[in-house]
Image (spheres, rainbow, N blue to C red):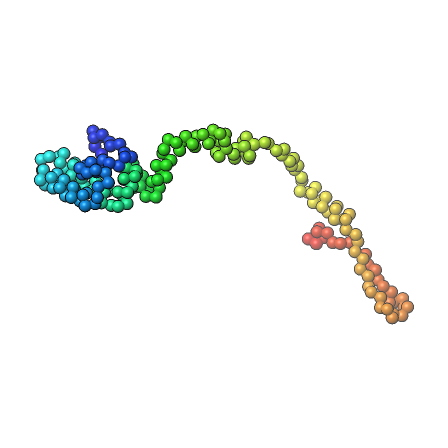
Length: 199
């Protein structure tokens, strides 16, 4: 936890304060970093300075600088984007650092604002104009309530009107004698409705 009286450090984008902590120039080699770390760690180690709390703080800063500058990936991010890049890499991952830095630049924000102004916020508001509250209101079809009994009566009436009576006839053999008992029988039957089938 941070102490309430201690001021918070601002995250830099220059990437040179860790080198200054070790007394080196930006872009120093790995061997130079190791030599400078050993020398400063021996000088500010808390066991050699038990009565000096500032030496313990300096030792923590030296360890932090060494751990970042000895890791190739962290060192590359720090050299390009500074401590802000390290913070973003810890929060969102190493790959998202360049996108975060790009989106935080002033020219990118200006480009987004100008695009929104020139397109009348089309990217964000197109749904409101085509199908939302700003869209044209179409005429709604009128729906009528139909009583189920009236609907059933209408359907029965249509079935009786539209369907002719079915005639079933007995076929006559071609060589049949002209006998009255062998006359064809014709029966007229109406098609059964749904009412008669359910009974």
